Length: 293
Image (cartoon, rainbow, N blue to C red; front, side):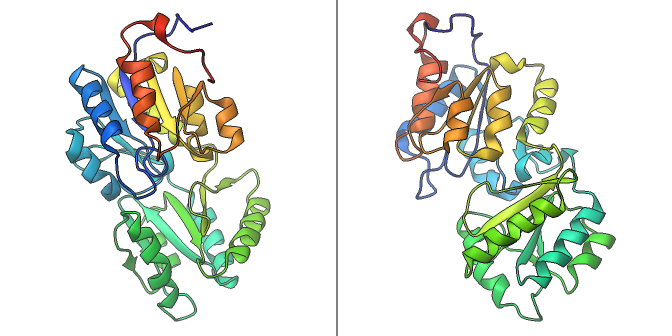
């Protein structure tokens, strides 16, 4: 049966890569039009990404977003001017320990410190930085700030909001190191994959996009039931579960699809656009399909 108790959606929150953006890193015309119509009808729209604030600026300008955006996988809530409204950094001792372990294994640690990426040469060489940063920059991340000593930089000047561990040349070593860190930091921090197969990340324990979304909803005085959240991966799951309408993309892992209220098309099939048409632009609740459809 359709869920006729669902309140009208006042806020749409969308992940970027794999969700709002297709595999060519573009917003399809159908999805673009759906977002614009929703905004014209008075619905608020923002994004929640694992990436830094600079990766959101084109979307902010494209849709005239005026409310905060969720960045760094929910460890930061940014104003549209880049100001930091709320943050949950990784404890420094955990950050330093994970970085040291990575360097011993020949894995490149890249620190997300607010809007910046901070990195140091690996074994005295810039080669790993160049190869791996090229991949991140292809996904619209900013060029990294290169420092001589990453641990010292964090101790003196930068807060680590998340850290990714990357080796595009040796994927098995990345997977093995993920297992190592997951065991090492069990109960102290969260280790997860959220996108590219060449990397994984460490986050503060229990912090996700849902934490930043809760702050945003309080800021806007909007109930979670009046929110639609759309995502494609495990880092979106808590946000999807929190929203009144939680939408998983068609290519999402089974665990994400199973816990969403609704499964839409893939990011190459206008999935976000179709979800907006289904739950936001459709005038009658009675016309809405059964959830987890």
